Length: 314
Image (tube, rainbow, N blue to C red; front, top):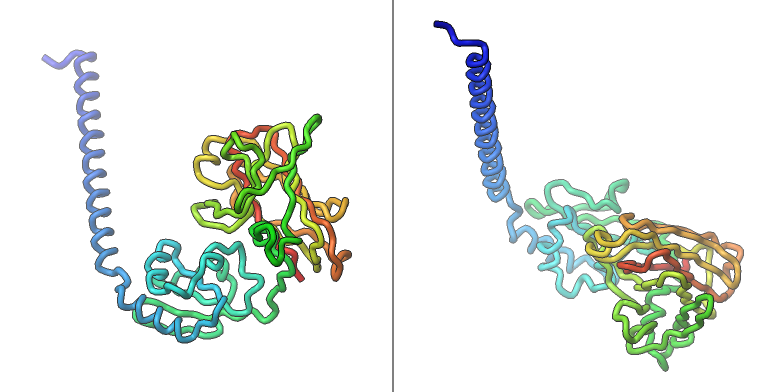
């Protein structure tokens, strides 16, 4: 006797389910085999430590003090840095750009190139096994006239203390100076995150040297510098520091830049935006010194671990 329609349908469904399960198992086995093969191949073709060491020794002979050294790909930085103790300082390892350098070095492997050098050709390159050492030359580097992050780090009473900023919280019924305590300007002694000062921020899983400034909702955080020598532009970068703040926070931060009382730049940094560059034209002020103010605001203060770095350049 032939199966009734309902029984035939159930049998077909079971067979279809078994086939799908078998297919999924087969796909999983293939994927695992591919992963294992790729891992083994990766280890077999790893760049030997001796290649990094030899390239590092060559760099030490050719490198001039203060020149930045980039590494590509990104994951290779610890391997390269292990050979470059004393060559790369903290400031050079946390740069925002290369504009002010006439000579830049790159250590790379597997044909990688740093994102800042993607449109440039090296002046000269040397190969040490699987590691390439390359020299890039910039014929017209920018001149930095004033570094706002560095100036904020100058201690009271120091030789350059006259350029150190003042920090003030302003609101409808609020005018509260933020006194200096060590390397920071403390804006609320009872709130550990409300301060201004030099900082190393993580943005896009990369470190950047910058000025930490956490604004509060409903008020303005004003960072003012006197006697700043200006050139043709103010070049700056903005970011929300640390992964948790970008994950848990939402609100943007508005950074406004004033020369004397004139607004020259206004940047609204969105929560998940990367380390973002802005440029303000200050050519009309070039060759003279002025008061420069940075004013920060945000509609919500939770997790607004804002950090920015600005330089006056010629």
